Image (cartoon, rainbow, N blue to C red; front, side, top):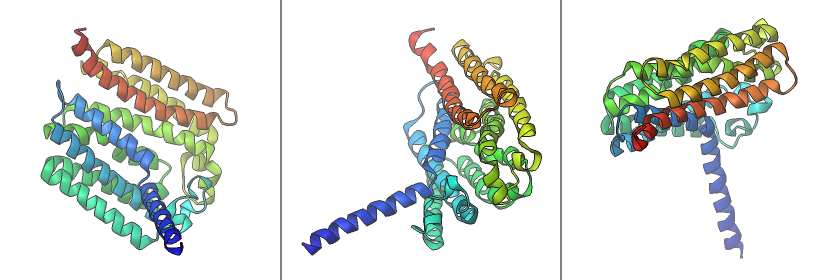
Length: 305
């Protein structure tokens, strides 16, 4: 009987440990990274993406993104422990220690790098490594605590995945890939500043100089609005450059227009909970607009439109 209970306990322990490592990777963030990288792959070719480039490219980019997320949590563990939003992370709760996390991050990062280097192409591997260093190193170690423009400058790392996906398929960086980069780069400030408005007291308590902490809520709301206007314009570039067609244009106008409605309300009619709803819509927006790019890329060809 005792051996049966021991086996059950071992399974529970293994399940918990796997869950902890999974959470160390920031799965929701990595999922968005992988999704935008995959869209970059599909947009890079008029037909279907070669299966090897798709599978190994997705795997390599995903593993290296997860490694960067783990390093980010290692470096931010003290601040995470003082913020309600991040208090349940495995390094904060003690479910994982620094040595375990470091070994895990190094292992999946090395595996991802090897996958891209030997099974995809060197350009994708080195670009992904630079992105990892930019996020886990330059942004987390320095920019995050050095300037209220941390999200703007550090957003370059978060905007890279479509470029990485494009490079995985073509071995090059096309101007159209840079348009995808620009969409995410401009999207990042209103996305994250909406969250920072909601959590500004927590950021102040841990001495992270987010814009609403250093410049106030009203100024930050103005910046969210201005960046959302700019995002509306940037989102039209795929159509303006001939990269996408009318189906995407309609989707971009509707999606960006609704984002703008949120930003205007946040600026001129703020109320409790609105900043968080704006943050939630911004995630939906990015997924939807990249889905629109993908649908526009294939649907007209399939139906002869």
